Length: 348
Image (cartoon, rainbow, N blue to C red; front, side, top):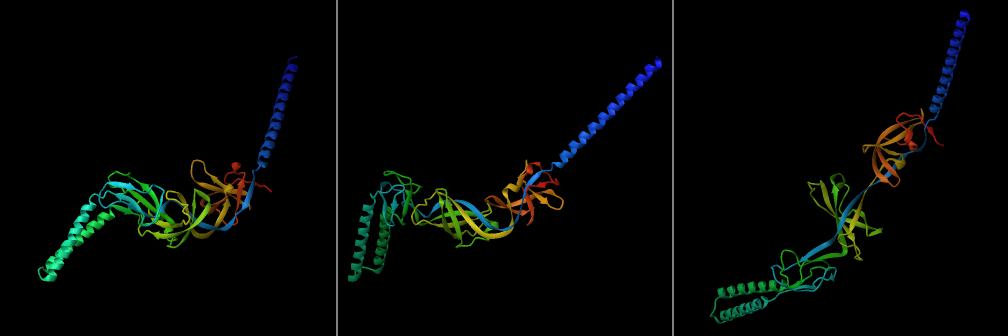
């Protein structure tokens, strides 16, 4: 009885061991199959072959439009304003009377001038009849000249005229005010040209010469491009910005371009031969400003994660200064599952 029970226990234990062994073998086969399946699921990507292209070297500068010539209308001495004949925005012509100042002192200066003229004439007559001297004549002439200049200055500062043809761009006083430090009016010349001043860095200044053509666009007229001319390059560099002020002359025969408008100046610096990649190929590394491109290696089917230095943006592409060679194939879709050295499958 005891022998039969012992044999039964041995047989039961053997059955359990076999079952556990078979179960273990079956699980290992399933795990191996799953691993092989994952290995077979290589990332599928789309690639594009890149090539060297002539890249235009243009630089965009922003500027504010200014009048080509600006004149401040003000008297030489403080005086009371009697009349202002124009207002902001009014067109004016050269020689047009703009402001009339108080002339209460003008009558006295005119009387003084007339007296100086009589004294001079009398000295001349006395010299002629032998009762005067040449010294007296010279003294009278000096006094007369001084009185003339004083009167002419007073006339000039009583009636203020425009020295140019243009538009009134500012008015700082009203009739009855005393003129002060500010000009009464400011007149800007808007035809035939206006100007914009851009700040060109030291690295670009060698590409800019007087007479160079530039393309200018305005936010006010987005569909219009005007060809401007470099009219002046300032000879010294601004120590704060390390740039050279450069004046651009812009044709404005119709007067549509007004001071204060925002302008964009496109400075053409020629072109250079460089690799161009689609913008879809460029990957930005999270947490930094670095840019990368996955480059496909056809020899072993892997991709390399290359850091690149970008140049000019060209619509839907970038100029690449380093990191990608002419003829390389770059990944343009499917980058989310990639890493450096990963084997990929090319999407047909």
